[in-house]
Length: 382
Image 1 (tube, rainbow, N blue to C red):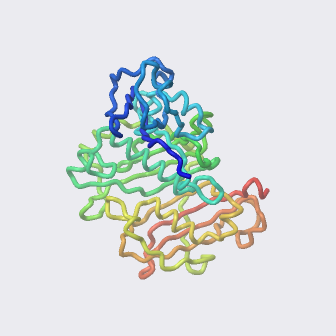
Image 2: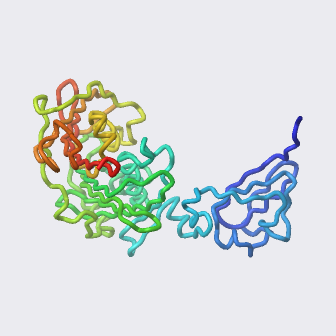
Image 3: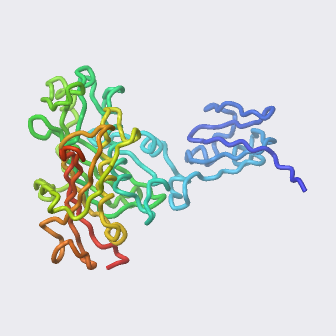
């Protein structure tokens, strides 16, 4: 038996009115001055919805909620019902691009946690969190009038062929967001010494405003042709000074200034050889993106640690850039200063662990990244 089903047309509605009368199987173009009823709840609240309309649907004086065959299907999971039902124009802007707050010194952007951004435990990974931080920072620079050609570069930097490189990064995590959670990331930057810039982030649960992660980083400027560090030109400094904001996401006494121990073949607990950067690991500055290093660092972490513990903090020291032609090694070893009791060689369900990591070139052993990670036993294992 063959059932007769009317063809379905689907459109996303963000704001305004859609007059979706079907003529010959085609949609009419959206109009913000449509004759559709402008007083219905959907338009007033500017809800995110998917308009599912049968081919016989017509625009009627009764408004979009009374169009025959039309259903409003929320695009957002029920857990985010507030957004699905009462989303504001301000929230839409924050979601898709971000916006300035606190007298334009702080930039805020909202993210939904998607299924491909989580790990086996249905929470986001450190790499996902770092990508959120990076995306917010780049959009911040762009919204401040930065160059559209450079990767977070200002106009004057672009003229001088200068790029940003991160030299140190620290992240503290209170808890990892779950699939379908909505978080907001705030970022700002300030001067750091004579030739550096410090960028900070705070990550909150969008609805409860609970702080779930903090991060701080130090950035320097490199000549893109010579690949050498250089002083910040005065013209670039003048572009930045207007946006300097003297606030610390991580309390000064909690910022990890301690030099990360050097890991050697003798002190390393395990190795991972033959780590090869791929084309998709490169960014527009023609070197490996800093987030990718975290993936390679974690590949040498013992499986039982990854399964039973959560990483609560990571500090990275970037020592040189990595290109697609490089072949790497990932090393891990116990730190000399361990959280909890005894040493890291035998885990034995200790409440806390600390590891030292090293990424280096496989041929000449030149160091790329040093890292230190702290791990705490997951609640279901305590």
